[in-house]
Length: 259
Image (cartoon, rainbow, N blue to C red; front, side, top):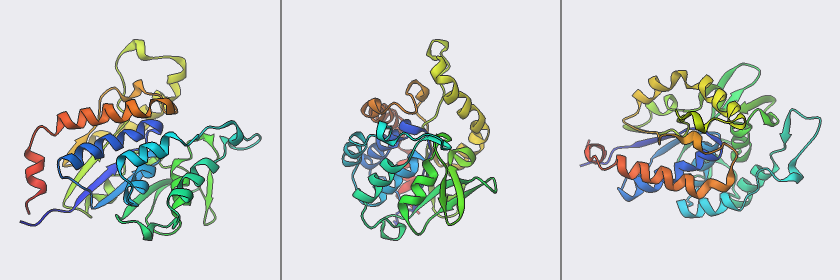
């Protein structure tokens, strides 16, 4: 029997995106590993580190010791509150080659072309710049200039980059970290921008989820704030437990090992 080529699409979601690590850990425990990965924003960060050879536990440690919103990165008179030096340093310090070509698994990184209003999928060249372009959440970070083009967070136009992988793999797994809570008591003023953003980009989610052979979307992820780095461990565990429970159905495991 020939093992099938598995694609893994990772959504954006701010800090919630680190839940992808819990998903990956649960998949690995079942012997399921990706042959190609796509990612947007936080999903792109996870994809880059995983594709470079880091294991889940190491990526968690690296993420937890990085202060993405340090006071020293605040800037005034710019299009975003923070610069992206923390993220750039995170990539270049831990992936010194800083290139797509050096990765052990090919990846696609989605960013939004600000001038042409269309998604762009990076798969070659300087890794850190592509990740920064994919992750610059509007108002939080300023747009990234790359090859004379301005980019914003890929989540604006393709927060769940499934389509780019569909014809590049035999089986496609989608990991989505932006399910909204339906509990009224979970709604606070600080959450309204987050919820409004994800309501606006969720219109295509049902169609995209149907493209996946396995769709993993832990429920009520909006209980975790997009920028709350103190909850990384809790987010990873929540996504891991959800995926373990989902994989109790062995049908997908059977199809991954047969042609």
